[in-house]
Image 1 (cartoon, rainbow, N blue to C red):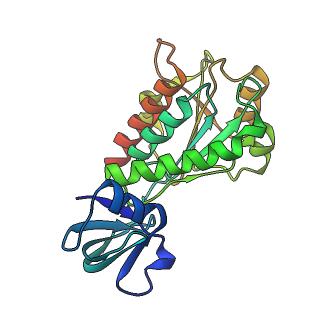
Image 2 (image 1 turned 45 degrees about the vertical axis):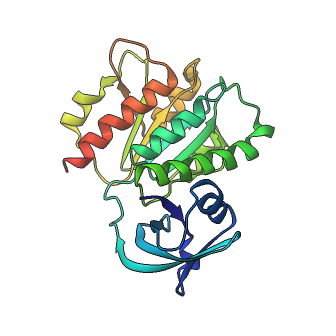
Image 3 (image 1 turned 180 degrees about the vertical axis):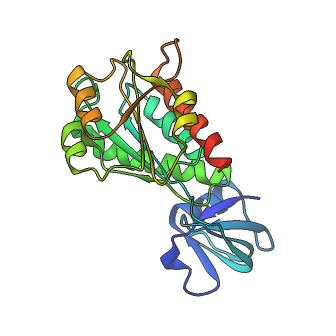
Length: 242
């Protein structure tokens, strides 16, 4: 069933009406017509099976058949991601949404290649990618792509997560599986992933001082996008069993 996004502020009356890009996608791309069944979600857990009642070029009217509301995640996950080179951030955003993150916090670290002055438009693009991923994978909570921040100021203002983990090549890091055996997931979860050149020694010290626990993904050194997906996959597996 085709899925479309409608912000919760626009659910106050029926019929629900898709406009803008969502109406364009329905009419021009999916060739939607009156009588078709679709699903509409608000990005905050509410979703409804609807029947299209009327189609115009700029608006699609939909009658609600039934509504559901998914409970919020018990253990919300924030991926604290140092921005990688090229288009890898787009891939990470897409897969992180599929793996159930609540928030993605892009970070500018000492070894980040991306230019800060180019990140506003990229943030908007990453948010669109997150929305498309929600539509495709059935995720009814739209993750927030937060404003990219420099690492040290972000840490100073951070309210620490209940479970705070940093993927680390440090020799004192503990394998993620062993760490979770001794310290089960609790409350909010923050997973901090570095750039291609890794965090600097200074940044590691800052993260440890702010309560992040160094964890390892094994002996093989992973690419940034692989590390992000691996870490989120393990956390999601553990979260689903709690």
